[in-house]
Every structure is written in structure tokens, then in C-alpha cells.
Image (cartoon, rainbow, N blue to C red):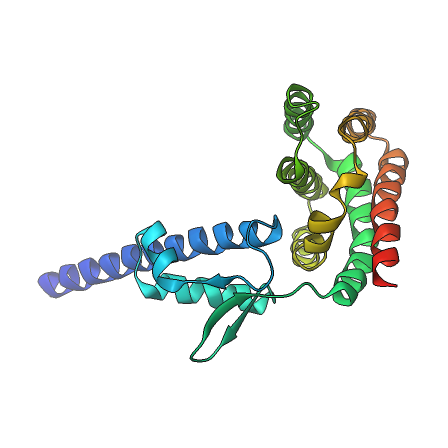
Length: 231
């Protein structure tokens, strides 16, 4: 009986380890391809070559295909049977609708963040400011996009609402491709630094209204530009 239990235990352990390893590889491929699409490194219409991606990440076809399924659910890629997988075109109207909803939820998240933030969150914003300062005058499009994404992630985490955070992440994926590919030039290095410093001050003071107002203006500026492009 003990021998049978040990064999069963080893089987379950091995199965679990392999499952977690495969899941980890799938996540790695998914997150890497997702970021390349969002940041514009992979432009709309680009074909994702299975053999090329598998070789880069040193994986079999299974993790790649699972990652592609997740990207397709987010409408970041389109799978054409017998032809291949392509980066989806940007739907300006869908992006506008998603950004419209996201604008209100980011303001809510900012207000909650001011009330619930920890010293760790303030340190993370401090680190962003230090990084932005060190790169002043050298902030290219990918760096601006990365700073913006990390800022929102910190504030969502500080808000302490997982449902809100998950909803915003999905809306971000839909709406940010158009902002990142077309609108980053509207944000100067100095404006980015000014916003970060204002956000830091509001967090330190736990000033929910001030931080909500800053976020509302930030989102409105981008949304106005987005509406102009959809006309």
C-alpha cells in the first residue's frame, strides 16, 4: 500500500512540475509577444512565425500555440487557418470606446490609491521619477510607454481592488495600442516628469481628490486626441 502511494505521489509531483513548467513558458511567450505588439515593435499585419518564436524561446509548439490563443482572445492577433498568425489591425473605434470606460476607472483607481497606498508604493513612484530624470531628453517612444504602463500598474496595485485592476488591464490592452503608436509625441519629457512629481505629492499627502484630478486631466488629454483621430 505504501509503495503504491509513493508511486502515485511521484507521478502527481512530476505531473505538477511539468504543468507548471509549461505554464511558465506559455506565460513568458504570451507576455513577451503581448508587449511587443502593444509597444509597436510588432506592427499590424506582421506574421508571427511559429518556428521563429519557438526557436527564440527554445520551446515546443504547444506553449506557443497556447500563448497565441490568449493573444487572440485579447484581439491582439488573428489566426488565419492554413495561413498563419498575424498581428491584428488597430480598431480605432474599439480603442476609443475602451478608453472612454478606462478613463473613468483609472480616476477611480487613482482616488483609491491615494487612500490606500503604502510606503512601498511611494518608493516605487520615487524610483520611476529617478529613472525618468536620468533619461531626460532621451525618452523615446518605448520608454515613455513603459513608464506610463508602470505608473498605472503601481496605482492599480495601491488601489487594492483586484476586480478593478483586472478590468483596467484588459481595457489597457485594447486602448493603448493606438495611444502608443500615434500619440506619444504629445507628451514631452518635462510633462511626464511634472505629472509624476504631482502624483507623488498627492500620494504622500493622501489627497484623493488631487490625485483623481491629475489622473482625470491625464486621461482627458489622451482621450481628446483619440477622438480627433476617429473623426
